[in-house]
Length: 274
Image (cartoon, rainbow, N blue to C red; front, side):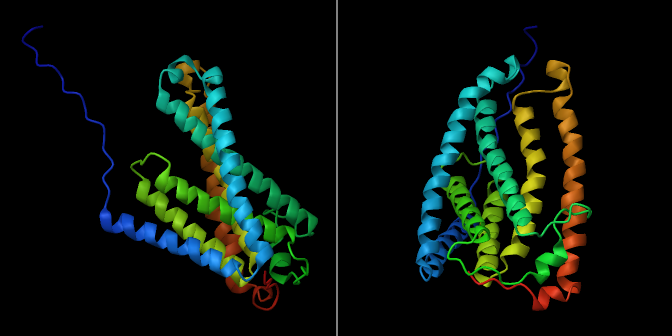
């Protein structure tokens, strides 16, 4: 009716930068980049491999994003195809899924090869053997060191991309802080020689992130009960709640954090200097 007042459209939320926080986190990230390069300069083989990983990670991520972006319209629902932001977010999530899967498989292979697994235990990695592991590596680039340098390159590139390449979302500062803290923790554990114990923590986080990635990709494609009458997104959501709770709220504190303070092998055993 002519007497009705038209409804005002909601304005999209605009990301607001907090100058002090923004510049502080970026400054700390830049410091980390130069500090990592400086410390690795004492190990020329490690530095060259790390720099090569940075280039390789950048190329691999962009290949995955391009491929996923090309595939997305073919597998998405009709409703999802009309939302360009869904297609872009799907491509972004696919490269994170690729990283989490590849890193999980890699460290599981390394632990199996080193005999640090116990398939009968609740947690697949034998933490006691990890704590008590001898400094077995006299090679210039052992597998666990390669794994760590790849992880470090991934997080440095991810943080760089988050700051300079990707669109800023409402959780920009939370994710930036997460990336900066992860780079710090990964490099400190690497430089201190705690490669195996650090890798167990990375395994916990990477494997529990896979269901999250699957949940987000399914949501962007709109594979839900309302759209396709099959509860794919809903099932993955429940699966994610269960796996995340098991990995982050039970295995991590019970089998890793707790044993860090109680297992004497952790104090007198493994100390691997790169």
